[in-house]
Image 1 (cartoon, one colour):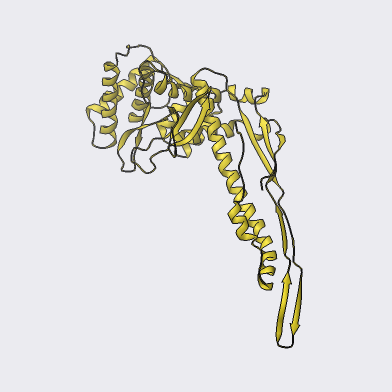
Image 2: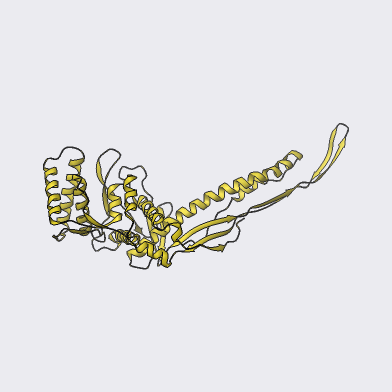
Length: 363
C-alpha cells in the first residue's frame, strides 16, 4: 500500500539551525540550538507522519473500492507506530590571547554532528481470520445509530449503511397514501422541495426506460441507475412523511466496500453511465441533489486529485472537492464515514499484532 515515507527535516532548515559560529557568542549559540533542533525534528516528523497516515488510509479505502468495482479481491493493512531516534552532539574549543586592553586574537573550532529520522515503522497484515470475520458480520446497529446521533447527512448514511428494506403490503400502501396526501397539499419549503424531487425521480425513471417492478422489497444497489432510483425514491418518501423504518438489513463492512465499488462502476463501466447523487439540505436551507462519490479514471495531473491510486496499471482518483460550494460533492465525507465504520467494527483487540519493519534513517 505504501511505497515509502519521506519524513524529514529539510536540509535548508537543518543548516539554519546548525550554522557554524564565527565568534565566541555565536559558537555558544550553535551549541545551545541543538536542543531547539530536537523540538523542530519532533514537530516536523509528527506532522509528516500524520499526513502520510491520512493519505495512506484514504488510498487504502479507495483502492479497495476500485478492486470491488472490478470484483477483485480486497486487501487490508494496519498502520502501526513509529520509533524515532534523533541524536545530537557538539563541542567547541578555542585559544584566546588577551592584552591588558582586551582580546587580541582567538581561534575557534566548533564541531556539530546530527543524525535523525525514523528507525522503525510498524505495518500489519490484516487479512486474517479474525479481521475477515469482522468485516463479514452484519454491522452492529449501534454503528448506524452513531451516525444518526451525530447528524450525518441522512441520505448519505442510509445509502451507505442499509442494504435493503422490506415492507408488508399494508405498510407500503400506507406509505404511498401518506406521500400522495403530503404532495397534494404541499407547503412551500421542505415539503414542496421533497415532492418536486420525487416527481423528478419518477420522470427520469420513465425516461430511462426503467422496468416497473412490483413488490414491497427494495434492494439498495448502485451499479445501474434504475435500481438506485427505486431505492432512493422509497427513502425520500419515508423522509417526507417521517415514516417509521420498516424491517431491513444492514450492510456488512465488506458490503459497504462493494457498494462503493458499485458507485465507481456506475460512473466508469456502466452501459448507461451516471453519477450517483443524494438529496441534501444546503446551508441556505434548500434541498438539492449533490454528487455522492465521484471517482474518475486517468492521470489527474498536478493538484487535481484529493486521493489517487493505481490498480492494474490504471489510475483512479477523487477530484479535489470544491470546498464551500453550495453543491460541494461528498466524496471525502464518504471516505470519512467508511474510515470511522472500519475503526468501530474492527476494534483494536480484533486486529493482529503489527510486524515491525526497519527503515533506513532519513538524514
